[in-house]
Length: 245
Image (cartoon, rainbow, N blue to C red; front, side, top):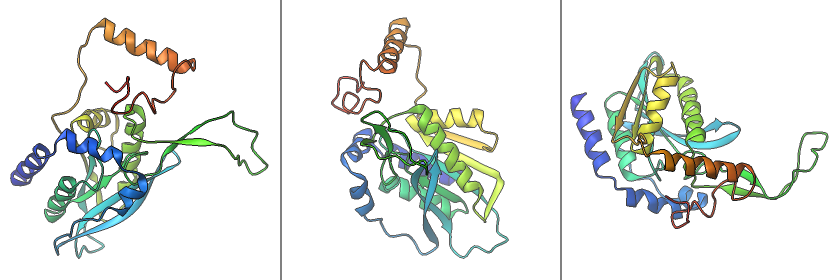
């Protein structure tokens, strides 16, 4: 176990934030088209769909090969940091290493990231639904948003998905997060009793920034709630936008 944790740390250190942000230029179709590196003979990968608040998320479950129905293994739900997606080579190596050491491992894309579907923002007032509850609207696909509340929801649904895996031991579900994902992991571990173990690496935990910072944040929330700026910072929150920081 000590050796695999050392390997995890080395893999984390080898991933730069710049490489993570490079993923933001990819569309969902481009993310799907990206090829996986080959797996070793003793590991298998299963592509899965995870529903989070009505939106499809794309995930990969890594597992040792030749499991028997009676085998019950510990599971790890991996929580990516800023810009992280499941096809990053280093996170695939991490998933593979854990599977080789007897774990189930879930690597997934948040809603609006990588191969997952996007949340939608209506561009017009919503019309009255028809008898089946359906509406036809013009909507914007919301992608590449760092949204703490939404992403904690995504993680909890990822845990729920893994709880249904036939070879999982429900008393040994752990979560592992890095950077911004480490902060998300810490919140989940404190609020979700299904999580029995949590590990974080250089977690983004915020910090005491002072009253002016918080006043600015709450002022922005007021502007968003009143429709005086983008309700979702699709343009201004992009890496080059004025709200990016």
